[in-house]
Length: 399
Image 1 (cartoon, rainbow, N blue to C red):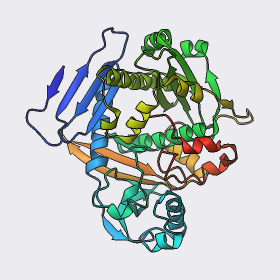
Image 2: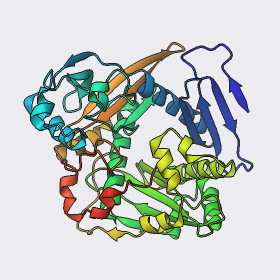
Image 3: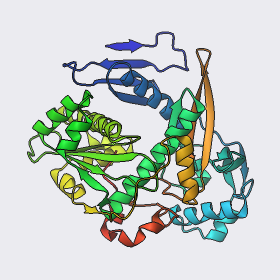
């Protein structure tokens, strides 16, 4: 079923495409799009798939089309010397023009107002750290050439948007650490998976995927932070099958919630690859570089590579902090990680909604670890000695 926005009200998307599952026990899929090629998709039961798709659509549209520069100035326009130094150190690694730290310090930047998460005071950081669009900020493209949606969120409550933004940013940090070091907390085996999914519709989907191929669930939780982070990966030996490898991930409060969401996201990537191959799509025509790369990873060899893991030492205990905004902020503070929160809002149907994006030069600024990345930061300093050099040259196989 396709619902079109016949009024062409610019705040709303152009079309909502509902794709119900053939079985009630399987999740439904929803896609949202507009004439400017902004899109969002969601997987889930009931209205959850619609909410997820709409949320992703508004998030993508804003960060690709609506983020603006507030002022032009040097990096110390409203940042302290220490704060500016952290950005300069990160940019000295990400820039592909060979600019020195001194040149980066003197450079003029397009700047956007943000909040310091340490005390929620206002300051300005380079717009290139926030916007996914390269237009009108061309002067920063060589300094921060690679950007992604990591840390972007759209929600009807400010606290929900801020929490979702920081949560996703940390989720991707855990993924980067796992990929670079091959280290995980543990593998989650079938008895625990069955128990965790016993009251979830994702259990039927998990069983179906297991019958189709192989599934490995990897716990990549960082115990310095509250919650559970799981990476679920699928592999298929038969080279005649459309889907040879796909993945899903979730960072949530409990094992059950993280497992359900990671299986749903895995199914989302499975459907995408299956439909792309079935319709004989051309990889070179895919505009999103991450998706283009992910499609090239559709081999059983990638599945074997990512499931070749090592286990971290068991001398650490789980975080006692609560899995909410206050808990994540407390965890970041304890690790002495400074960050900034971009905030904007949208009035729609007399209700207020919020956009947020978390940014920190103390963490990886984006997820393409194969180029233009600030490898050396406060987070990576803890595990730099465990990094496999060959993994630094290969981007993590995740969309």
